[in-house]
Each structure stands twice: as structure tokens, then as C-alpha cells.
Amino acid sequence: NRSLMGEIKGAVLAVIVAITISYIIPNYELTTEFLLRTKPTLLDLGIAFASGLAGAYAIAKRMDYTLPGIAVSVALIPPLCVAGMSIGLRLGIEYTLGALLLFVANIIAINLAGYLVFWIVGLGPGWYLDEQETRKKIYNSVALMLLVAIPLGWIMWNTFEEKYLMSETRDVLEGQLSGIPNTKITGMSYVLSEGGAWKMVVELESPLVLTSERVEEME
Image (cartoon, rainbow, N blue to C red):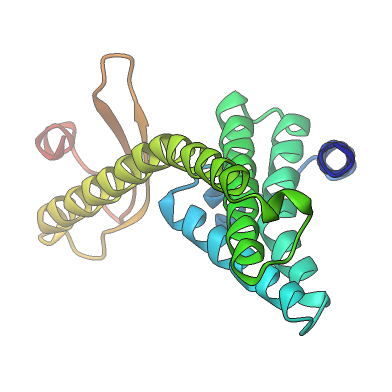
């Protein structure tokens, strides 16, 4: 209970600090690293699990007590900061929920990794000596990890679909623009409409004025 309360207090403090910083720097430019933490995937879950294994092994073997802190801070602090800044910058609930999902996934993966390592080496509190109790806790952690993997897998699939759509659209547009000298694509964005269809917004740079007929043809 003490460790759980400590984690909750630390998480809340990190979010509050991030919200405060977002008010101090209101014109913060969203970087790729920031946006990636709002759309976590199964890869993030695997990275967190590997970090937990490394940190737990370092503690069990008394190799380096700074490694677990680094592993945990890299996996847990960034998504909390992103969640807090998303609230402060009023980016939308999807950004905040995405970052919090990454935090929950990371903490579940790290805890499961610690359970496994400490159980294998025989290090931990009294309940580690109870085979049945140990297996129960590990099974529960695995169940939670599989549960959180569902939305992560869904986000990963959507991300791959979006990247494929962007790549295919860019190839088609570049083929259509090949006959127009010194014309290039400078930006592409997309949104998912209420009907489930993708709406693309393409920015072009050209010394010529494109006719409405040509634009309609490209659409």
C-alpha cells in the first residue's frame, strides 16, 4: 500500500508540474517525440517490459542501483509530462488519454518484469515463498498486460494504416504533379471524419497557379 500510494503521489505531482510548465510556455511546439507518446503501441509495451527486466535484474544482482531509476524514469515520466502538458495546452482529451494509456501500460509491464525476475532469483517479501500466491500475482499481472495490449494493438494497426494511406496518397500526387515544373508537396495531414472516411489536406508549393479543373482531377 505504501509503494502504491508513493507511485500515485509521484504521478500526480509529475502531471501538476507539467501543467504548470505548459502555462509558463504556452506556445510550446509539439515535437515528434511528444506526439508519439499520445499514440502508444505494442512496441512501447515491449520496451517498458525490457526496461523492467533490466532494472529488476540490476537490483537482484546488486549491479548498479542507478540503472533501475533511469529505466523507470525513461518509461514513466515522459508520458505523465505529456499528459499534463496536453491538459495545460488544451490539446484535447485524446492526447491526454493516449499519454495516460502509455503510462498505465508501462507501469504494468515494469511491475510484471519485476515480479518475474525477483521470483526467479528468490528475492522479495514473504509471499514470494508461497508458490500459489506468487503464481496468482504473476497471472494477474499477465492478464492486465494482455488487457492493456488490446488498445495498444488497435492504435498500432491504425498507425500502420495511416502511414500506408499517406504513402500511397503521396505517390499518386507526385505522379500527377510530375508534369508541372518546380511543384512539390510541402505538407500532408489527415483527419478521420464522422462517417469513418479519411479526409486528406495537402499543401503544395508551385510557381504556377493550378486550375480548379486540375485540382478536382487530383482529388
